[in-house]
Image (cartoon, rainbow, N blue to C red; front, side):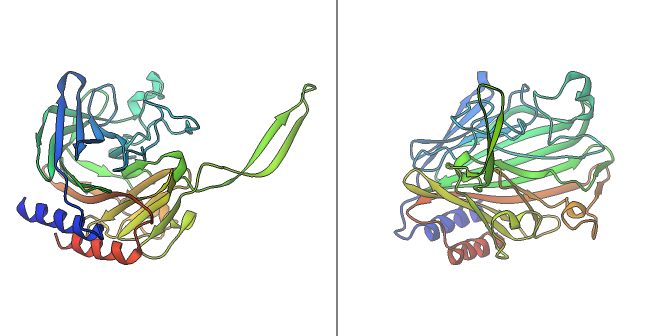
Amino acid sequence: MKKIAVAVTSALIMLNMQAHAQQPVKLIKRTNQNKIDILIGGKFFTSFLYPDTLEKPVLFPVHAANGTMVTRGFPIIPQPGDPTDHPHHLGIWFNFENVNGLDFWNNSYAIAAAKKSHYGWIRTTGTPVTKNGQTGTLQYQANWTNQQKDVLLKEATTLRFSGTEDVRIIDRETELTAVTDVNFKDAKDGMLGFRMAHALQIPELKDKEYKDDKGIVTTIKGKTDSIANGNYLTSEGKQGNDAWGTRGSWCKLYGKMGNDSVTVLIMDHPENINYPTWWHARGYGLFAANPIGGSIFTKGQITTDKTLKPGEQLRFRYRIIVQNGKETLSTQAIEKLAKEFTRQ
């Protein structure tokens, strides 16, 4: 624990050219709401939501240090202009599309009751354990189940939160232990997901249709989304939509939100399966790291199915950084942070 705390402090110092002080983290339990609020320097950062009415626990909404919400608000607190696709994309989450044939990723309130049997559910067990400090800690247990609540996997996750005047960091460690024979079938949708605010989408040319009073439709081509201004960049130099389906040790999404540039950075860890991960990074706002989607991303050249026997485990480690300021994080700064993270 001490080693990780020191590493987080080191990362925060590197992220701040003027070495702003690390701010205290406070976690406030709201047990009657199955919710834990995370405050950094007295400012709201995010909430850990774990009610059984959600199909998985999530961090939502997520704010930069300047208060800007970097996650899409829909469907819980929709914002003006929010896209309404993929209602299962909520905040930051961790699950997978095909576990013993059950789809954990795409499950949401939008799935008809008659089809729910094809979807898995991640149910938090007990009350999460929290600790305040310069690095705030949240630990929780959860069961990956079918609709009958039969357990396939037991999850143990630790989330560490830290930050300074213009930086927020989440370090995630997740351990999945098989209760029965479990097969992660190579699939596109997984594992660590983050649904971004409209402004951080990649701008696309969109056609618009207008209908006159006689019902005649006219299409105006080439209108650009005036809000979206995001862009991806991977450790291997892939940019924009070209980042999707490629591998890299890190990927950043950046764009202008208000007066600030906002950077959202996800780092993979060498101890994770199939490192470096594939980036399931879509222009419409889905930002995800998926190490078990090889067949999809390589058009069948390799397969990354993973089978666990009862008692066997998979471990995952990721770092998420949200930074705001006059400029986006430079590649040089990110490479230094990545080296520091991989030494942990």
